[in-house]
Amino acid sequence: MFIYHPLVLRLLRLINGLIDISTFFNVAYVLTLTWFIFESIRFLGNREAKLSLYQSILIAMTFGGVAINALLCGNFSAYFHLIVISLIFNYLNRPRIFGLFLFGIAMVCFAIVKPYFLAYVVFYFLVLSPRNAIATGILTSLTLLALWFGGALLFADQYSDFLLALQYQLVAKNDLGGYSTLRLFGPYLGYQWAFILHVTIVGLVCLLALIGISRNQLLAYDLKSQALLLILFIIFANPRIVFYDFFAAIFVLVYFLVTNKQNYQLILLFGFPLAIYSQLAEHSIRWIILAYAVMSLTAIAEAVLRNKSKLDQN
Image 1 (cartoon, one colour):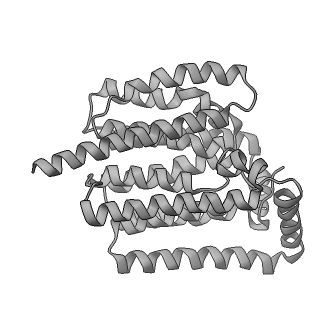
Image 2 (cartoon, rainbow, N blue to C red):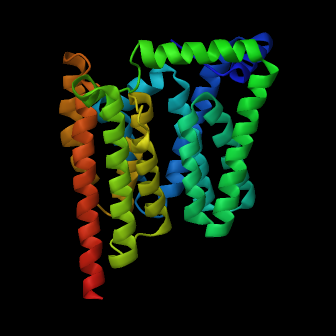
Image 3 (cartoon, one colour):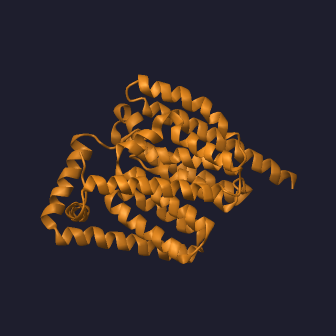
């Protein structure tokens, strides 16, 4: 069931009046994926040989079949993630104010469709001074609120129907999560308690990361590696993460391992069995995500410990 804000529905009708909407999105999706691969190669270009670059992208694309399923399902979220991450890569390769402006515009537009995309606003705090990051984050949030409630005032009846449909989807159908903490623990703890558990886990991870950075500088990575870790955190912080959100984290982790000279080829040992399992077992994506989460924490912990030992030696 697709539920969209009235402004989004109006835009879709406008596009459909100009061009066949299926053709439009098929072309847009191909161009988005092509641009993401181009920006990925530029982002990793000074780290590895070209063959390794293409190999790492191929590994991320085929890992467990998740990315393939996400890209073929046609959900907006999959391509929204690719666009936002491409804009981040573009800015890190060539820092320009215009790049941040495009990033903010994309974030606001996507957040009208999927509000959790506003979480990418924390990227400002990585590349701007605290004062500028706060000001830019507030401006971005206010712009989103103005569009959101502006649409509610202009199209009151459609907005009311939108809220009723959203309430039915979330409450009556218990659609509070895809394959995240909510989906794994919701049936046992209740979805409200599962949501509280999710927020607690994400909050503790964030707190521990901040303590680690401020006291021991365990995460003394370069800016690109820090950005990749931040994107991972943003994706996993989404309490309604679904496979078409999650697949972007696969690319980000592989890129993180590449930038930190890890043996990312070992991911193939996980990817192929999981890909086979995903074809045999129903709803297996949640277990792919669980296995990936364990592998992610292990790989990041190993990189952190290696950085700590380097700092100790210096």
